[in-house]
Length: 368
Image 1 (tube, helix red, strand yellow):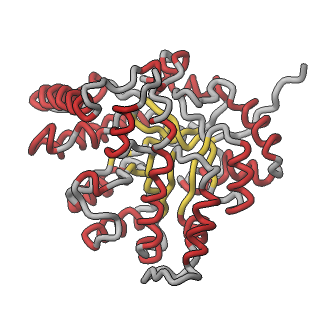
Image 2: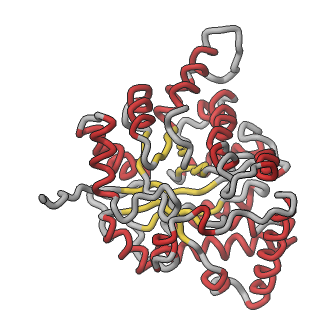
C-alpha cells in the first residue's frame, strides 16, 4: 500500500486546555485566589443556568484519546501532536475562554488584571513556536479603551487574531454596529488582526438543554451553530463591514451546508422592499471578501459552500480534541473529503493551507 503523500495543512480551529495552574503562573499572588473564586462562581452559575443539571461531562464533548494527549495542555507536546497529524500550524482556542471567567460578575474590579493574565498565558504558549501556534486572544468588549490597550499590547506580542463574543446583547451590551465599538474595530483593522466568532451557546438555548431527554443532549448540541445567523446579519446588514472595509471576521465551527441558503435569502432581500442603510453590496459579497467559515468533515456542505462562494473564504480545521476531530488522521481525511466533494486541486490547496496562510500573515512556508 502506498504511503500518503503529505501536503501542507493549517487548521483554523483547535483547542487547548489552559489549566488553572498554567494561568495562575501569570497572575500575582493576590490574583491567584481571585482566579480560584471566579472559577468556582462560574461553575455554579453554569449549573444554575441549566436548571440544576450540570454541564456536559468532558467525555461527552471531546475525543478522549485526543483530550488525554499531552498536546491538549502543553505547547511542546502540542507541536508533537501536530507533527503526528501532519499539520503545520493551528489557530488555538481555549476550552474555557478567559472572557467567561474574567468577568466583573466573578472578579469584580479585578477582571482586567485577570484577562491580561489569561492572555499572557496564551501568549506564552504561542511563544514556543509563533508561526505554528496561533492563539485566539480573548477580547473583552465591555470596556473599549481597555480592549484597545489589549489589541496594542497583544499585537506587539505577535497576535494574529482575537476572539470576540458573538452575542454582545447577552452580556447586556449593544450590538456590533453601535458607534461605541468603532474605535475598537478601527484598532483591530489597523493591527491586521482577524476577529474570530467561535461557536457559542446562546443563553436562550439553555432552555432546550433543560428539556433535552437524550443522554448527551443530542437535540441541544445540534442547534447552536444556526444561532450564528444572527451574528452574521448584525455584522453585514447594519453596514458595519461596509464601514470598516479592512475588518476581517471568521466564523468558527458554524457548519457550511446552511450558509449558501442563508446568503441566497439575504441577497434576495436586497432586491425586495427591505432597506439596509449603509449596505452597498450583496451580503454574499461581504462574506466572500471580509468573512469566512471553518469546517471539519462535511463533504456535501463543502461542495455547496464552494459552489456558492468559491474557495477563498473557506477554512479547514481539525477541531482537536472534540468529537469531530480528524486527529491524528488529518492527511488521509483531507484527501478523502475533498475527493468526495469533487473540488479541484487549486481550491483544495487554498482551503487547507493558503487561505489561512494569507489571513494570518504567515510566511511562504510555515516553520517553527
